[in-house]
Amino acid sequence: MVTMNFNKIHCFTVLLHIFFKSVKGCFLLQLLSCYLHMANKQVVHLWIEREYSSMASKRVLKELKDL
Picture 1 (cartoon, one colour):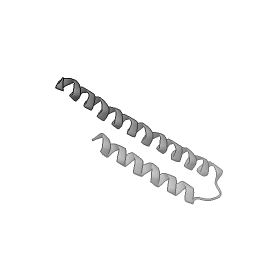
Picture 2 (tube, helix red, strand yellow):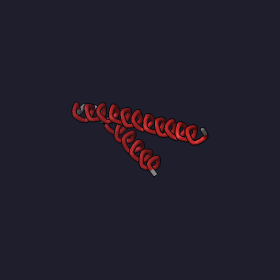
Picture 3 (cartoon, helix red, strand yellow):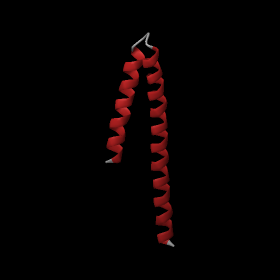
Picture 4 (tube, helix red, strand yellow):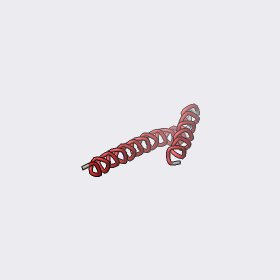
């Protein structure tokens, strides 16, 4: 469920970034485009970090149960 919501948010921000980048001449739109691009990178980084830490903690718990 979380992955599906993440994919929707990711696609939406990428589409917005492409749209604003295609609009030339407006400084505010270009600034917003940069902001969306950086925010999207941060969201991806946090999501990967959370998923990785979740997998790592599950593996540690499994190893503790096996002891």
